[in-house]
Amino acid sequence: MEKQIYFDNGSTSWPKAPGVAQAMSELLMKGAFNINRGNYEGAYEVEGIVLDTREQLARLFHARDSRRVLFSPGITYSLNTFIKGFLKPGDHVIVTGIEHNAVMRPLRQMERLGVTYDVARTDTEGTVLLEDIEAFVRPCTKAVIVSHASNVCGTVTPIKEIGEICRRRHIFFVVDTAQSAGTLDVDMEKCGIDFLTFTGHKGLLGPQGIGGFLISEALDSVMEPFVAGGTGSQSDSFDMPEKLPDKYESGTMNLPGIIGLHAALSYIEETGLEEIHRKKMELAGYFIEKIKELKDIRIVGRQGTEGRTAVVSLDFEKADNAVAAFTLESEYGVMTRVGLHCAPLAHKTLHTYPQGTVRFAFSASNTKEEIDICIEGIKRLI
Amino acid sequence: MQKTQHYVLFPNHDNAMRLYRELKKMGVRAVIAPTPRVLSTCCGVSLLIEEEDIERIQQCIKEHGIEVLKIEAIERDINPMRDKYC
Image (cartoon, rainbow over all chains, first blue to last red; front, top):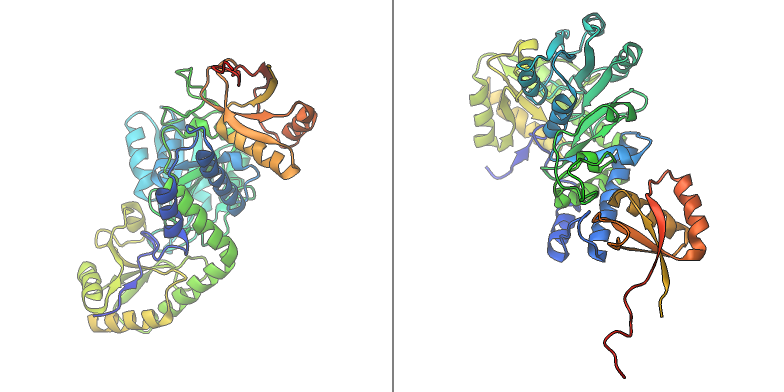
């Protein structure tokens, strides 16, 4: 086996965007100065790139003010920031049947403190039933939290419609863009999103360990920072600053991560989100058509390319999914992700619990030739 | 000889960087500098500016919604002639 074929871009994208590794390396080699602390030219230069990155993210997610772009170690931290920083005993939230454990585990922790939640059902393809969201709203409902695209089957959640419900019912709207940022156009304003969480290392093609969130003015005015500590500002006080970004950015930030993300976002801006999405979906469509020709394999979720991302999950009906994934990797060099994908709720919804699925997540760097090799491998398995 | 220096003070670094960037675009002189302790006990940064630019800077602050604490003037307290006796 000579070639390594990477189809695990749902876990983390690889290869990263051109320039990411170089930018990070340059920072570490030439001056990894700390921002908000260091009062010298080198630190101000790094601070300038951090500001550029906030502006890139504001453009990407159509936010009016880049001051509302906050960094965190990743989307899990961002979701915890909301769930633990905002929700109080007695509050109720609505989630969907495709949520990741990044939502479900902190919610379960909060349930022990008196927060309640309902799970809106989905259809057999993983599309949330909007009528459930409407029906679950109670006087104490504070938020709807949804995954924009399923990390298991790629089905896209109609966030614009859910945003309209939230606005009408005066509920905060939280969106997890782990599988959609860098692939789909996510418009914070049009979709009425109050808390948009993102990670830098998947579709945004940046390094691991950097992510963040964008917060609306209304939510910011009532939310407490989940983490408190030094910010390099108002250092004479034990109280957390109220100003953004300091309110939510305690401690030294992952500056190599932000600098890497800046390079990745520059690449995405140059290439164009639509072009990246077109390439990914062309590959996903090619793969799906080839799989449909085979027996004893079930494509989980949507059967075509409409309303989905380039994440495709397969259930090998006559083979153990883990053995199938292991064989693809060891004999054909095809790297996938097998199991429950940290999303047992989604697998229960999609009737793939507990066996899980083998997930193929394509990037714009993949090729049809790689898919052909993978399909040959799959044919030997069934 | 003492010289008056003018500083824009901010609640945080982010706002300082934002104003610095806008002033640079306008061609207005500004230098990022640590906030003199006499002006604030905070460990933040300030922009050292020229007195004649204050009006334009205030306009820029307003236009871009940049949050500042105040613009302050102090006498430069480092005597360049210190320790020189001849």
